[in-house]
Length: 265
Image 1 (spheres, rainbow, N blue to C red):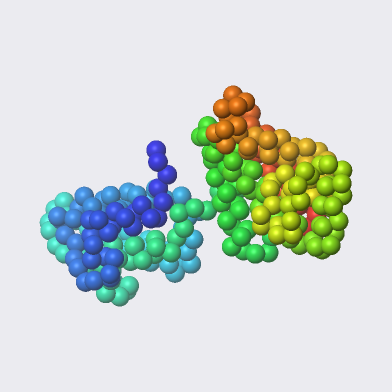
Image 2 (spheres, one colour):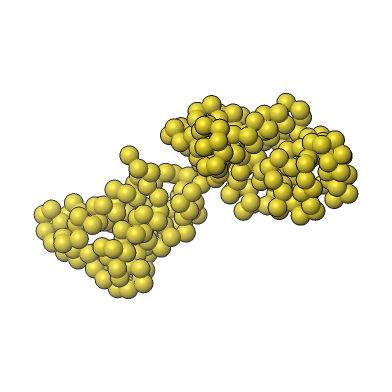
């Protein structure tokens, strides 16, 4: 069964009951029964983690849904007009539902997602947690390429975050040593935003931000992530599979674990 998200329900409402979008006055009657039933059915399938609401907003959502449910039952016996919910102003209950769902996200980290509490930037943290959740979901769905690529992007974002906290001179000296030792073939430059995953991994390992075991696992993830490039796939005859996905996710979890132990203490 497809996962229901708030924007899907909003799209349905806009299609079958356009006045709700502009909070215009309108009524519901027996002729709207099928549309109302669909709105109720989809709303009740929403994952709880997507209902990011205050107590008041959630109460209003429940009241609006129940007003429509009662009307659906009553319409089996008689027809009448439903235009508002007592105690919730003059808005139609469908408008109330639409307004509340419009503030809910379509994505949110699952309850099993590793928490990145060491990152203070709330928006950045939630975005990364959403990516981690999507990575695990892709693995569960057998989407090997998506899981491999997403895990690599999370590793890259985390290492960029932690290196950005470091003294620039220390980072520069680490890069110079890596260049001298031939570990880095090209100077990645001073702008961390344009670094490759390879540069992030080697700099973080040199600065002992991540241990050698984690670095080695991340190097494997880097190699697997390169398989997304069609030219490389053609040359090597390799493709992302369950093994590449598991390896990349393991590297992601190792990096998260190291940063958690360092920055949560």
